[in-house]
Length: 489
Image 1 (cartoon, rainbow, N blue to C red):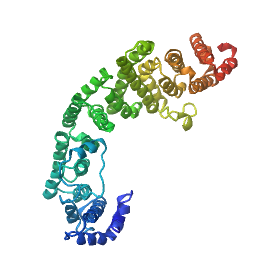
Image 2 (cartoon, rainbow, N blue to C red):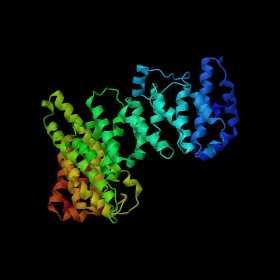
Image 3 (cartoon, rainbow, N blue to C red):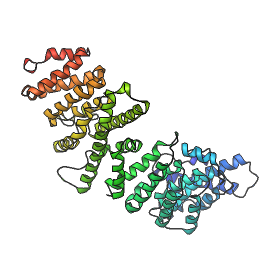
Image 4 (cartoon, rainbow, N blue to C red):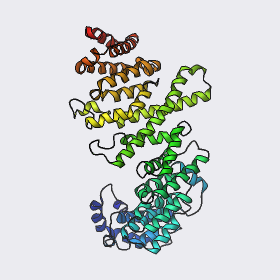
């Protein structure tokens, strides 16, 4: 219990290294007791070795050099002892355990070999230079029959970048060519993200092959969502950041048929929200321009491909077959996700609470906001046609934040969204919809009245949109009609 009390808390290394070193004699004492004994009950033996391995892992993780490791005498022997194949989990293939780990990576405790595998990777990192004995053992553990042990090795490959790159690359090859467990791969893929730029072309080939491998098989109902998401996000980086042609071709294959590749598109869009505004218009950087342009291409291609399907299906909903309805629902889910990600990525989210700019609270310069409106206009125009309240609401919330940047264009998009997609989708029946529209109109009356008063088309649009909410029975809309100045009626 004393040794278990040395478990590394959630803190930085400088906060944990010295206290653990001060109490290391207790870990060493426990090791000296259990290492030579063969008569200790199994449950107690496993708990003791688990505590030793965990403390050893904490010591290795809290060290950055061989000198710092020297504070923990016997550390290497403890880790190697906890990797004894007679300790749990036994290195024996278990198909049921393999399937369970693929669904939900977890393991029962005590499990000394799992703790020790993680500790070994931390030790190899802290040593700072290759050790052949460590390399041989680590490679063997990367193919261990226990998925939890393999997970500790392959999920930490990036830790070896500074200590033993040849070993790291051999482990990466093992992950791509030999690992088949989705639970293990779900941790392996994020680990290679930090070294993607070292061999982008090589990674593109490996990731596309992995994508093909899983696309060719049947997808189980319990497939881990993040597994495919990691593949998608890495392929996106290879195209957007590292300009890998094959990665770009794969992404365009997805956007050309977003229904066929719906899960990949749904994983891609949230990862791209931050790139919508990337790059300072006053200081153009080719890399920023490339990332943003390709991001907007993905949003635009996806929305423009799916909007006609959603609109057509809404008009014929009662006559659609079950298969057609399934396709329409999938298309709508993707488009709804796109509208939501644009709302968050544009800076409109929370704009009313930031108030960093009296004229327009959205973050960024006027040039940046104007650029977003110009580049995203085809996508925003398409979203205005979608007959689904959630899409309409996110679109209007986005547009509201940009009123000051282009009052006329924004008013046209707002009224298009209400008269076209909004009315067809029943947005006027939502109380949030009524409140938002009334708020937008009052903003125009307060700050941009002359814009509407001087344009007959805008006045007609205003009255048509108001009529939709008045007919739905909302008293706020009716009061707004009564409050309108005569020149706007």
